[in-house]
Amino acid sequence: MEKVALSILGLGSRTTSFYLSELNELYNKKHGNYSTCPLLLLNANFNTINSLLPKPSKALNKVTQNYLTTIGKLGAKHILVPNITLHETIDGLEGNIGILHPVLLTIDRLKENNWSKIVLFGSIYSMKSNYINTYLSSTGIEVVLPTETDMVFIDHVRKEAYAGTESKTLIKNYHLLIKKYSGNYPVVLACTELSILKPLSVENLVDMAQLQMEQAIKVISVKKTV
Image (cartoon, rainbow, N blue to C red; front, side, top):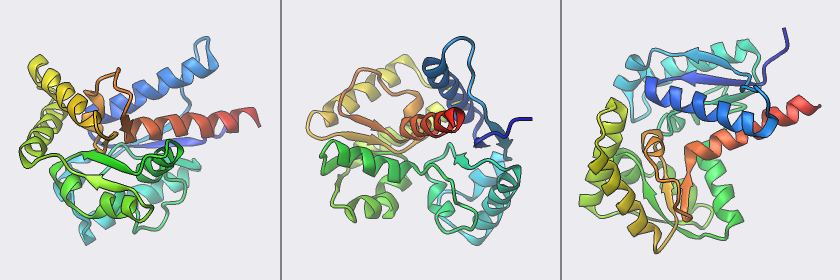
C-alpha cells in the first residue's frame, strides 16, 4: 500500500465533510480524470472535544494529544485539523509537527498581499481572545473587530451553520456583513462554520480553512511528483 502523506483529524460532522468535499474538488481540479484526494481520516469523538473547548486545559490537552499521537503512528507527514480554535491547544502539545497551521498560513497570505490591517470574523471566543490577535500583531498586522452587535450575529451564524439550520435570510445578512467590512480592510474568517457559508465573490476575504486545504493539495502534490 502506498504511503499517504495527508491525514485529517475528523471533528464536527459538517466541518469534516466540508473539508473532505473541498479537498476532493481541489485535488481533482489539479490532477483531473477521476482523481480524489488521498488521505487518512481519524474520526475523533467530537462530543468529548467540543465539551472542553474553547480554552486550553489539561483535559483538552490530554484528549487532543492522544489523537495527535495516534495520527503520528499512522505515518502521515501533514495533518489537517478542521477546527481553527483547537489550534491554540495544539500549539502547546508534542507531536504537532506537520500541522497545516491556519494562522501561520494566513499571515503568509496577508504578507503576500501587503495587508497590514484586517477585520477578524470568528467565534466570540476567537474574536475576543488574544490567541489570533497576538499571532498577527507580532508580525505587524493590526486586528480590527466588528461591533459588539455584529460579533454576536457572527457567532449566531457559526452556531446555525454547525447545527445545519441556517436560513436563506441569515446567509444573505451574513454575506452583506462581510461585504460591509471588506470594503475597508480584508476580512479574515477564523471559523470553519463561517467558511461553509461564505460568499464566493468577495475579493478582500481570507479564509483560514481554505488556506489549509490549498496548502494540503500543494504538499501532497509535491509528494506525488517526487
